[in-house]
Length: 167
Image (cartoon, rainbow, N blue to C red; front, side, top):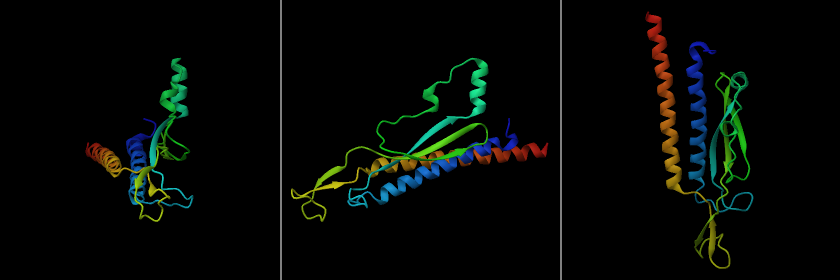
């Protein structure tokens, strides 16, 4: 293990950072679920947290030594439903980096008939954000469970370190 005793904790910390970002994105989506006008003049567009594993140099060298070609499906994600992306990279220190990309969802805005709304067009229809609160809550629960799993992994590592020191 190249990272010694702390490799598992570093890997879990990477997961914790990614799930925290996902929860932030979901919270932002829920907070703007009724925002019909942004600075661009359009309704709020739902954001998504996209996780991507990027294999590091150590893993690439290992694959080359074994004579295997790297499968591009494992290293790249090309989501066709995204418009543009912004990303942050996290590393666990072991040759594998995890990129969490925040990208807008390109699905259509909802159209609601509400002639009394200030943003209604001449026909009485309002463009509403493409945010579904049920989908957002499912994403929040998923991120919360993944976060809890990473916390449990850190705690298990700490318990193993403690037991090893007792020997």
